[in-house]
Image (cartoon, rainbow, N blue to C red; front, side, top):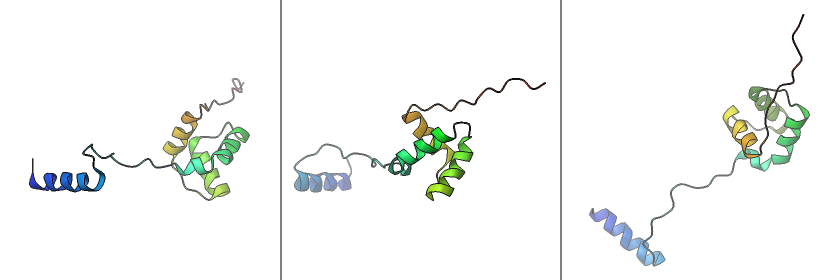
Length: 91
C-alpha cells in the first residue's frame, strides 16, 4: 500500500470515523427529467417523429439541446415505445 493511500485513509478516518470506500461518481439528473411532462406531451402529440425530430422539437419548444441517445433512454425509462403508423402498401 502506498504512503499516499495510507495518508488518505487516515484523513478519511479522522473526518468521518469510517474507512468504507467512497462512492464513485455522482448521480446526475437528466436534463429531460426537469421537463418530463412537456417531453411526454410532445411525444404523445407527435408519435410518428424520429428521435432526431424529437431533438429538434425539444430545442425549438423548450430551448434544450439533447442527443438522440438521451431521448431514447428517457423513452425507455418511461416505457414509451415509438411505433410508426402503418399506412399500407402504395399502389
